[in-house]
Image (tube, rainbow, N blue to C red; front, top):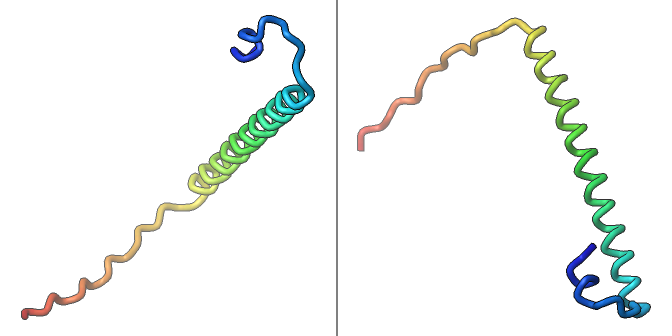
Length: 72
């Protein structure tokens, strides 16, 4: 329960206040659902990446020539 509701001392809520509360609760529900979906996707992608890294042999990249530094 929000501090606003507690401080109102059981006075009836106006129509606008009720709508604001419903909107706020709906928004937080959406935010929490998106967060859970994001965490799930991140964990799935992490597992896939680690599995791919374990299955592939470790290949070192060839060292290329460094460009010469010009004397100026």
